[in-house]
Length: 276
Ligand code: COA
Figure 1 (cartoon, rainbow, N blue to C red):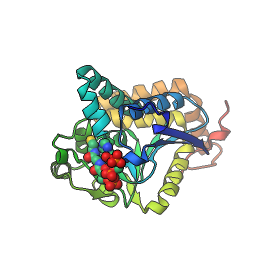
Figure 2 (figure 1 turned 90 degrees about the vertical axis):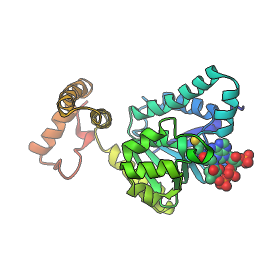
Figure 3 (figure 1 turned 135 degrees about the horizontal axis):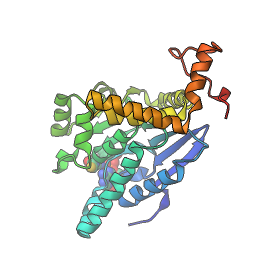
Figure 4 (figure 1 turned 180 degrees about the horizontal axis):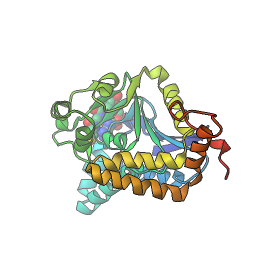
């Protein structure tokens, strides 16, 4: 096993961190080394102030061909249960970090997306695919159930009949079908994918970052709550947000009510006018 640090890479440009699966010759499948490196990159980036949106993309023809059947499964299992659990911790660990990341995240699904790849796909707040991308829960094709959260991902995102069909047949669906089945927000032709993701990132960059973090967490949290629990959680979450940014909300109200410089129903308030 190589410890090549370049199996995952990033660059920061115009307020966006472009984080890449970077094993194109292996269709970006996730080895223990790649999972460890992704964890390190997420640590390095999370609280930096030179970007506001993280995009997860794949180099080459794949987004990610799922878990590495050789390095993640066969070679790790050969080392015993301790190594297996460690590899799982490292994989699931970075996906969990991403689910609750301090910045908004977008999956830019440029190509193949299989099995274990559904973990980080689900972890990203938003997902835009190429029409040409190909998705499958291929586990059934090589004789296992869709583990590592993949079954949970499709049941959470898709209607039950579609999730069942997808998991039991292992058939490929393209980006358009993935959008129809709600695995991703939308799909666009590959040639326009990056431009569309950039456009979406720019929308997010104009929003109050404290409110964005509170919102993305709230959407995931309330999904499993009763209405009453959600109501209470949202009161507490708003009050907690105020301790990080008590001025943003007041400025948002002021620019609408006093300055009449924008309408919240039609766009975001001007962040720059907010006094420090
Ligand atoms: N695990 C380990 N190796 C993988 C891999 C995976 N999940 N996906 C691709 N690779 C490797 C191939 O073994 C091959 O290695 P080699 O060059 O040393 O022979 C290399 O990546 C290129 O793959 P190849 O199959 O030749 O590319 P392709 O473009 O013809 O096909 C896929 C792409 C993704 C359809 C095909 O590689 C595939 O079916 N991968 C497995 C997908 C899967 O079931 N993942 C679920 C895991 S949970």
